[in-house]
Length: 208
Image 1 (cartoon, rainbow, N blue to C red):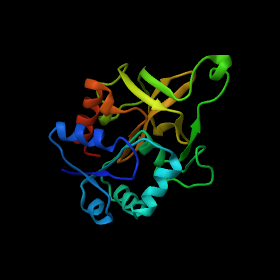
Image 2: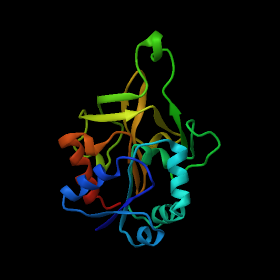
Image 3: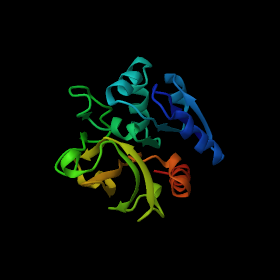
Image 4: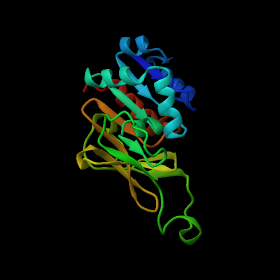
């Protein structure tokens, strides 16, 4: 399987690529529309600000190739900001449209649990357990496992069935979501040791 690691100008792309290559995958960083069109599967990883990364995709003319891949039934996997981009928009960049592959938006951690009064810091950085809400091939064997998060915003699917896993940090939040051939995680598999590698291996074996 030819996997395009989508280069949207954000950070942490190299770690994701290294993890897939470690598993023996035929994966490479790609930033041209024709390379995404030719790929069998897409991975959108990274860290950064929603607007910056979304605009990076637009500047590289990669928005439609990603949407076309999703429509064509190719596996599309988002990591951290990659998951955020799947949604219709984000509180981090009001008024800017996302890819719209999943219904819903991305929200900032806020409320009484955070800040000076609550004691929890934003961004959320650390290891938290996963609670699966439904079975998904990419999450096989991950119930109750601890994975590594670094984020200030979280996805809020409009369709409850799109949520695949939850975790808790001051509140319950969506840790993985997807529908059909589109799937993404809020945490970083490439930083989550053995259980993170398991997710990537599951993705490579996934046939949506």
